[in-house]
Length: 178
Image (cartoon, rainbow, N blue to C red; front, side, top):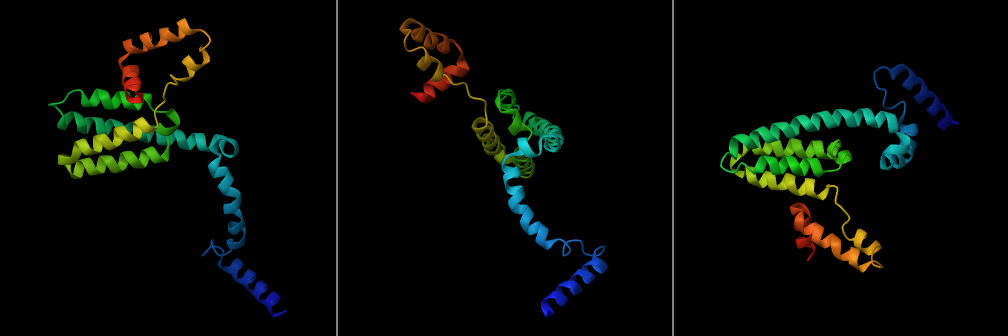
């Protein structure tokens, strides 16, 4: 009975302090919510489709702004290597749109940009870091799947490697696979 009285007293205290401390009035429901929210956070498309898309648009715009700032910084400091900025831009264009609109990419861009501003001598290190991240999240063409599906047609299987060698981006991929 003392426990029941304590709970009632706590409830009364919570009602009085609800405006001052909203957190203590909801500790038990929040304890159950993280378990319920964990699956929804791992599956953002199903549970939070419309609400997360608004957030993604915000991150997308912010990420585009941060990336443009980083490119401007690179333009100023890499004038002796004009190929750097187009290379970075191409890497960004190849990256998955979901990653480009993610909080992770926002954090990476913010970190790389602030470090590049504070330590300009290490700009190429930060460019490399950004390129590595963009490459890891790039939309890769499945070159091996197409020839495997046409293994019964050996002549057509010989044609794709000839076509691939003409494309410099695919030549890099085939060279790295060898």
